[in-house]
Every structure is written in C-alpha cells, then in structure tokens.
Length: 106
Image (cartoon, rainbow, N blue to C red; front, side):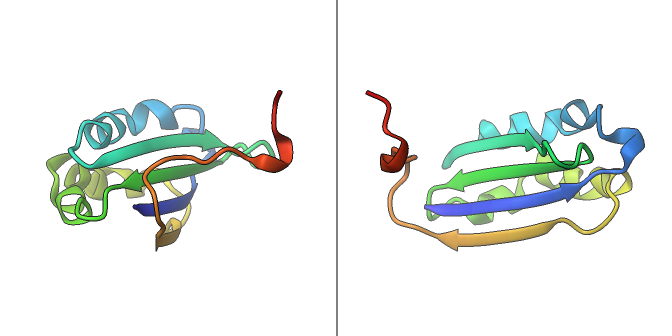
C-alpha cells in the first residue's frame, strides 16, 4: 500500500473549522476506488496542527491526484494554512493496520 502522513499547520483563525473546510476533499477521497483509509487527527500539543493519515492501493495514486476534489483542494485549501504541508510517503506491504503487540489488550 501507499502510506502517506501529512502535517498541516492551519492558520489559527481557521483551525476549529478545518474539518468542515476539508469535508469535500475528505469525502471525495474516501469514496475513491483504491482508498483504504483517510483520517484526520488534531494535535494535542498544537491546536493549529492537523495530521492526515492516508492509505491507498498501490495503483490508486494517479487517480487520486487527478480527481476533481483533489484539484479543488489544491486551489482552495492553501489560503487556510500557515505553510506548505510536510509529508512522508512510502510503500509498505499489506493493506491494513496491524495490532500493536507491545500493548496487547486481553
């Protein structure tokens, strides 16, 4: 799978409304064939930072970056962020989340 993690530093005046500002982008991406997960989390240390964790099947990347909701996000979302988002992108085996053995719940 293609595993992507993106750090978004949102302008303080837009941080609380970020989930709504990204709704079309989020829902469109989640509906794409080949999307495995697309999840936002807000930092507990910096309320202006959101972390986006994405997973796609190996052959789904091109369709994602060419999708209308992605193009719309490219046009609209930069006005709400403080800086260019930071990204880590890698291919890893599998298409699911593994259990964390060190914290196994019995």
